[in-house]
Length: 252
Image 1 (cartoon, helix red, strand yellow):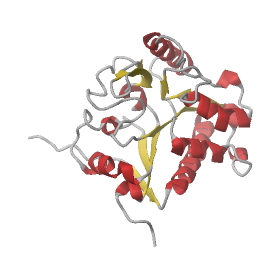
Image 2 (tube, rainbow, N blue to C red; image 1 turned 180 degrees about the vertical axis):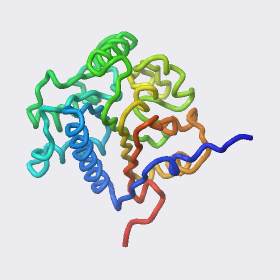
Image 3 (cartoon, helix red, strand yellow; image 1 turned 90 degrees about the horizontal axis):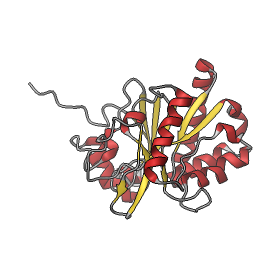
């Protein structure tokens, strides 16, 4: 007898907020709490940062005077869940955005930041980053927190619709060609994401509502909605979404 797989909503913690600003604040608070848990248990906090507008707002909050004292920054090791194939100074660089909004304002030691080399040959950059992960975190690397977002098409990191997102799970990092953009990306595979102790997905906006409804409550179809593949093996998955992304009217 076939057992129906639980929906994403059933196997994750979905937290709903009035607007994008509150999503960013909740995401920043989760980062702070996750860091405290990791440092308290193991003395370090290994986090994979994400690109996008919501993470950017969260990074700005974390670097603000009100919050910067709430994290033991010397114990944090910064990784990246995906990257565009551009140099770090390019406006499209995920590292560049995180550096401008979080790392540089906090004066983070560069030795504690491990960026994907988007300027290198994509396949070589992916292989080099996989080696870096094993060097820093062991043969089966486990991050304390992987931060992700979700696009209007249901993609996450640089896992886009059209092919099984776990097709390259023999690898830790891959360099897929993204047809819709006509370019390569560098990205964690689901193997790496789902090994994490905690995964957070932050998304907002009415343009996400159709995809999010299918992702959270629809059948398992990660070829169409790659974010559905996110399911930490022994960790937890938390969503931070606003009412618009759920197709709900604003609070009145």
